[in-house]
Length: 230
Image 1: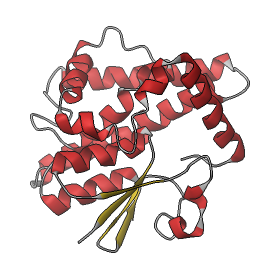
Image 2 (image 1 turned 180 degrees about the horizontal axis):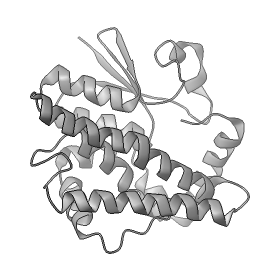
Image 3 (image 1 turned 90 degrees about the vertical axis):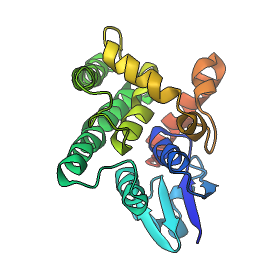
Image 4 (image 1 turned 135 degrees about the vertical axis):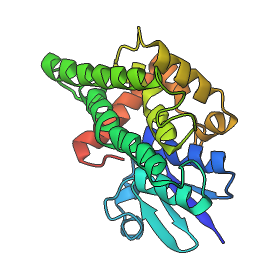
């Protein structure tokens, strides 16, 4: 049986590679050329009709949307999500919080803070402010529990961490959120997380080098303007 991950070096892509590493599942990696629009080619649209990464094909069965992939992998293995109804619901609630809130707000902060050619202060403030608000919600939850859905590490933590770890790229202030910081550091120390964010490549170095950072922003700006988002 073969599991293939179609991905690129983005927070949504890292969600699945981190989960696969955590679960210890064997898989092959197919890096898509987002700048070249490979994610919009007919062969990939047969796998993911939305034309975005990540997607997997597990023994011939395609799954797209990062949250759906995480649920599929958790249910396939019986790990990273409780089997009881209440426990499962808690994980899914926080997973949906990431999918519907943290990811979209940080994504829009990225667009207006990093990529959009015209700087619109009101838009930047709007999305960075909402991102900060969502971070305070996470901090409040993590003041009560070790992980987002309770005492057990889950796909909700993986999905959320893969985004919150890039807060500086979005220009979102994380000062004064001790519980979020504690949680973030704990996940960052996990071997599967360390490896997962290097598949298909580690993008963090580009965010620390001024020239590479500028080039990355230019490339993504071009993708946004051409209507070819990941």
